[in-house]
Image 1 (cartoon, rainbow, N blue to C red):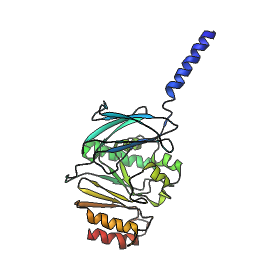
Image 2 (image 1 turned 30 degrees about the vertical axis):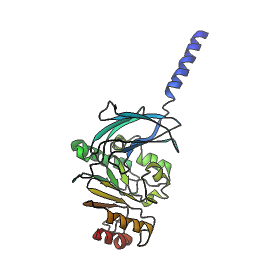
Image 3 (image 1 turned 120 degrees about the horizontal axis):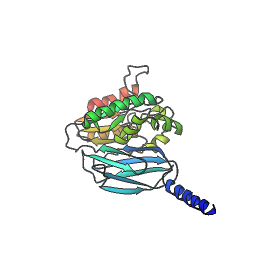
Image 4 (image 1 turned 60 degrees about the horizontal axis):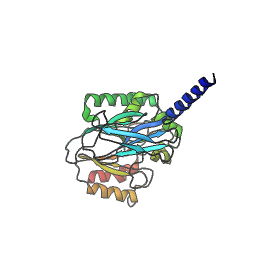
Length: 285
């Protein structure tokens, strides 16, 4: 009997040791496009301290490379897969936590591209599940749509609430939402509901110029992400940057991504700042 209990004790220790390496996934894996057509960042968050192995390749053998991530901050992980070819589909796997795929950004000489966009995702994950389900159907039918998604702000209802990010934007009980974030990087503007932006920056740490504004090229498109919650009036740092940024790009298509539009057809009023400061730059450039 004592020998049996000793055996059971050893088995229990082995079981605990074998399972403790993967304590549980809190968010992700999900993608982050930081502006380079030869890279893609993969992020995830775990429940406790651990290191994870990420693998990638041009098919699901993930034979191109692998790396071991070390956590930072609140059990967060990020690995930038680099040395990739533009306009190419790659597959990746975070061991024990899930897999996905992505298409790198087009060549800078590309003349056409397809991009997805939506916004105001806050509060209604069940509705968001339906929207991203349609977007997934779109790029399943037409793989050229598996590029990136622009989001016009108000990601969650209360941006300084961890529970809102967990339950509204990264809910684990919505399969389409989880799959979409594993397959398409989301680039978005800060909305008023992101509040201070501390958690927005935590989960979507884009290479901001300052505050929450930056820009990037995507094939024939130049995308500017604005932060409407710091000054963008003439003479401000953001305005001066925006004017210089628009003047410098030679891309045929230019998109300015912001949350509150100059003209509204809904219940919100028009934004005079966008009308008076941003629209003249749109006309000029």
